[in-house]
Structures are given as structure tokens and as C-alpha cells.
Amino acid sequence: MTEKYKAINWNKIENRLDYSAWSRLNDFIWEPERVPVSNDKQEFDKLDASVKETFLKAFAALTLLSTVQVKTGNEAVKKDAATPQEYSVFTALTYLEAIANKGYGYVVGTLASPLHVNDYFDWAENNSALQAIIQKYLDIYENGTRWQKKIALSFMEMSIYHTGFYAPLFIFGNGELSRSTEIVKLAIRTTSFNAMYPGVKFRLEKDNLPEDEQKKIEPWLNNFVKEMTDIMDAFIKDFYKEVGWSEDALNYFHYTISKNFMNLGYPTPYPDDIMHSLSDVIQDGVIKSANFEDFFYYSNRNALTRLDNE
Image: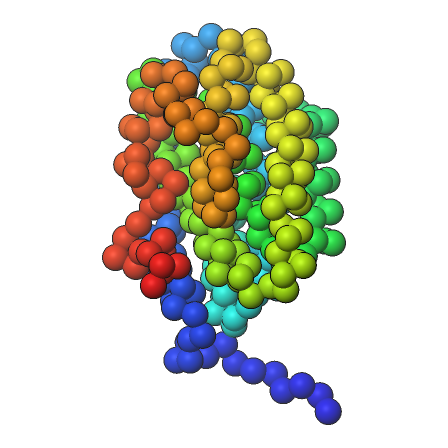
């Protein structure tokens, strides 16, 4: 007998987490063109050539990486949704991801020379490290288990994106390009949530897995993170070398990795005081660009992070 097709019934909610998540999504809707990035143009043109190149390439890299999430990431995860409402939440998150994706490209299109806009996207598409991490992600999204997909998605959103976010946050920490950084601030609210939600869902679902399956998770997680950091550490060292930001960018990336281990409920791989190893400039950029407590854990009256303790 053919299985009955069922409605997504929000009057019959299986998991309150999904309701809380949905209730927050309207907070994240924004339109990139309403941010006056063009007002940064005069200030941008005065920056050193190497800083300008790094800045624009960072946004081009973000555009490429977020394209993976728009086209494949959230779609792959929602196919394994545990509840009908979870499917709806990931559908909405795909739209929010698309807004951020448009925003990254908007910065490049606004600040780059019109004759060279596409050169930055060509650079990103031809970067071997970015292509390597994308291929790794596509394999997991196509062939991974439900929990592997959620883990991978959360690291893209909470860690890998921040290899690109670092450049505008650092520049903003020096008091420059505030409108362009507003794009990042708005995007981070979405990307942080798009890491938190699958992270909390992963923690709730993990305990219901067979014991032999649970034992596979931490070794897989550690191996995945090692392979991911090997690729992205090399990318960061090369990408930020010319402007002299490599060491600080690495520390910042490792800080975000530890944040996501916490999000997933595992011990952090880096020292607890790694935050203190970050430069004052990047700390200023982070603190100024968002309420620090909310930088990764944005909250409103529908607090997501409380629900896993209820």
C-alpha cells in the first residue's frame, strides 16, 4: 500500500525546539542593498592595495562557500529531518543563506573596479584549497549519515565561514569600512543560527542512536576536523600572508572551531584561553560588530539554547 502523504502540521509539534527556531527566523530577514556599502568606497580606495585585494577576495570566497550551502548543504540536511517542522526550518534557513550569499557578492560588486569584479569570483573558483574543502563537503552531503551532515554543516557555518569573516572584522576593528562590516554582522546572525540549530538537534538525536553508532561519532568528528583544519589552516597561512594577519587569523579560526565543539557538546580541541591569544584589533572587530554574547549565540524571547535543557 502506498504510504499516505502527510501535511506539515504546526498544530501538532513533535519537538518544541522546532517551534522556537521557526519563531526566530523573521529576526534574520534583511536586504543587502539596503546597507549603504557604497559609502565605504572612498575609505576603501585609500587602503593599501594588498589589504583591498585580501578584503575583496575574502568576500568572493564567502560567496563561493555559501553557494555550497544554498544549493546543497541545507537541502541535504533537511532530507533527513526528524520532524516535519525541522524540514520547514531548514527550508527557511536556505532562503536566509541565500540572502547572505547575495550580500557577500554585493560587497565585491560595489567596491571592486567594475572591470575586475568577476576576477575575484574567478580567483575563488580556481583556489585549490577552497575547491578541496568544497569537494569534501559535497561528499558528506551526498553520502554521509544524518549526524555527519549536521556536524559538517555546523562547522561550515560557525568555523569555515569565519576564515573569510576575519578580514572585514579585522579592518572594522581598526575603525574602517563599517558599512561593509554591517553585511558581515547581519550574515553572522544567520550563520550562527544555522550552526546552532543543527548542533542542538544533533545533541538531542545522538542519545537515541544505537550504542555502536554513538561510539563512531567522536572518532569521525575528530578525523573530520583534522582534515578540515589541515586544508583551511594552509589556506589561511597563504591567504593572509601578504598582509601579515596569518597568525591572528589562525587563532581566530581555531577559536571558532572550539566554539562549535561546545555547540555539539564535546570538549574543545584548543585551550580555553585561546580567546586571549587574539589580537586586540580582531577582538574589537568582533565586539563592535555584534553583542559579544550573541556573536555565536544570538538570542531573543524564543531562546533556542535553553530548550535542550528543558
